[in-house]
Image 1 (cartoon, one colour):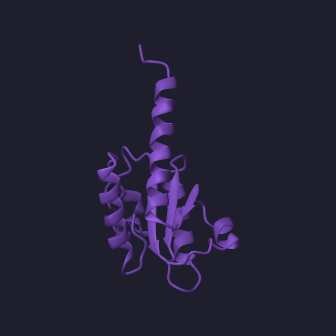
Image 2 (spheres, rainbow, N blue to C red):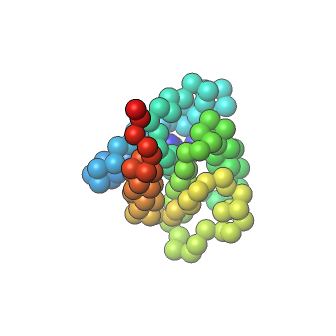
Amino acid sequence: MAGRGPLDEISALLLAQILGKHGLGARVVPHAAVSRRDIARLDTRGALMVCVCVVQMPGAPSHLRYLLRRLRQVLPQTPIVAGIWTGQEAGLDERLQDNLEARHIVRTLRDAVLACARAAVEEADQDARRPASP
């Protein structure tokens, strides 16, 4: 899912392409599709994880916080990864991590791919433990 910035959808496309090369299905959802007005129509069938891609610009990420809250309302049990591409080597501000409703917050595409791969393995393990339907 793309954040609202001008480079966010490009970063989401790049992540989806990398995930595909690792055998993980992904589709890119533009920011307009998760607006307050349109999020109720979002097709979430088959979504095992949501990755929100944001090229972080200076300033408060309130729009990201609100986006994650909207996503949490329509996908309460789905893991959410917030990919915040800062271009900095330093870790993310702890207040930012505390304020965002995401299971994982990552700084690099590599970390996003690893988080998605872990989620896929966890889902496969849960499927294997579920009793078969009669």
